[in-house]
Image (cartoon, rainbow, N blue to C red):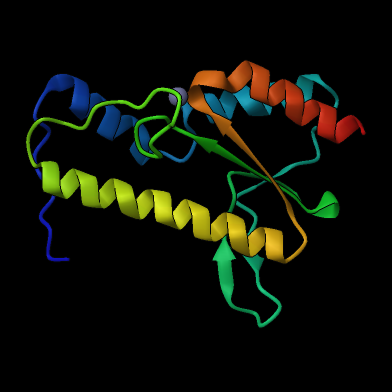
Length: 142
Ligand SMILES: [Zn+2]
């Protein structure tokens, strides 16, 4: 707690920070286009999901509410993709490692809560957009 946001230590880090501010990220747009082109235009964006007690859980990037299917499109840097295992920025290491750990913990909590409510959760990593969107389509046609 009480962490200060460091200034971007390099243009590359800066670009990643800017890119991830937006909710309509490039991989999200790709997935959505793929879904529409595959004949599944009926998704909702950032659909609010509450628990049985009415407590807010999350707004997944893409949701098919009728199918109880929640889709997260994760940027490899922010969500700490296990495949890419991208290195931390070299400065402000404590800040970044705490921030990333919070992101990972939050992702895991959301997924657990959704699964407990009977939702299917499908995560698409930025680096595997094509293959993981294909397996999403397989879920949708089944
Ligand atoms: Zn990745």
